[in-house]
Length: 535
Image (cartoon, one colour):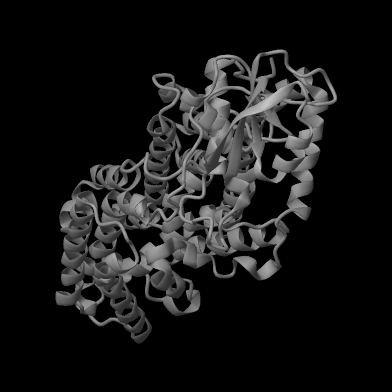
């Protein structure tokens, strides 16, 4: 099977990415980070705020606009469709895998390592999950990889350096326009340091890397400059807040990222042993490439560890060099006639674990109370596929069949993302789960008290206005106000005497936790008050 995959690497990657990234786009509830991006994109279409971006008519300059611009290409056909808003990040994630493949190929000078590394990256847990948790990260890292790809080709080329440099500037510029300097620090900087150490610090390499970096930053900074000139006060306030977050928000100790390899998900065990550089450096084929990928990985982790603000999703750029690092060890294991003791123990442990995961799906009915026909169809389909993969592992459980076992990893993740995630809806524990819909809202103005969650803005499908009791109260006969859980009692005390409460609707967006569960989050409970003027 690997021979066929090696023969058509790009087609293989596209097929794998389609199965990994394009199924079940409407199943998961919209997250807070997604809602922010979706709202900005929607208001580009409905309010024409293409450059001075807004969320609920309030300036939203925390993130650059490229992801929203790209999203509008699809969402314009249906501004309420979650599928169309999520489709762009899946496309960009696929581009990120393809860019990585060509970058790895350019560095390794062989399709096999590039293909294996790209398959590992595409099936790594957080590379898949980041599309739902923080879509902007997908954009900034995917296009930075494009920038690194063309910068590398510009350094290597003797005839097309100018063209490749232009494309590198474009990739870096789009990355900056997606999430500011994040990927410059997390991807570009460790890459270029590792490249100069392992490969070349020639005059040409230095000139190309510095020029593409500066021009790419200049391109990406055009939006920041425009906003700084058009709305200086708000821009300065937001920039100061964002900068202060790096040292005061979500602060974690230096060693917080030391378990970074776990973010690769199914590849955790082999990824960990691939980091044993002194042990494997004499076993891999391309020692210079292994030194480079190891340095790139370690430097990325160290640089990220220096920043006080830390979150698991910030480790996504580390998964890219880690995939390249692991691919070289995997290729050694594919080719060796006698596998070393460390690889053999790690491989056996890894596939016992994967086998147990595969057969454990049989226990799903023990933790799900749903017993609908659709549940049983989904359940038996998932069990059949997972048991088939487990059977492949069982009958090929040998170091000499590591190629077949490698493919079983890919197949397992493809089944989880294409079939398994569909079952998320059966895990819903909150019978009272419901979200605000635009159909429940009046045609006139919608108000909110104190604050409003990004997810609620998304659900309402419109711009709402703040309600300030210190100013004149709206003159409409019926007034609808969105009130968060924490402000309900305070709001009721301030309702003017000439109004009465006509109705109150409760919206509980806790999908997996019922009100009785201690993990039920009050933040996700919202009320819609309809106030009626007394006769």
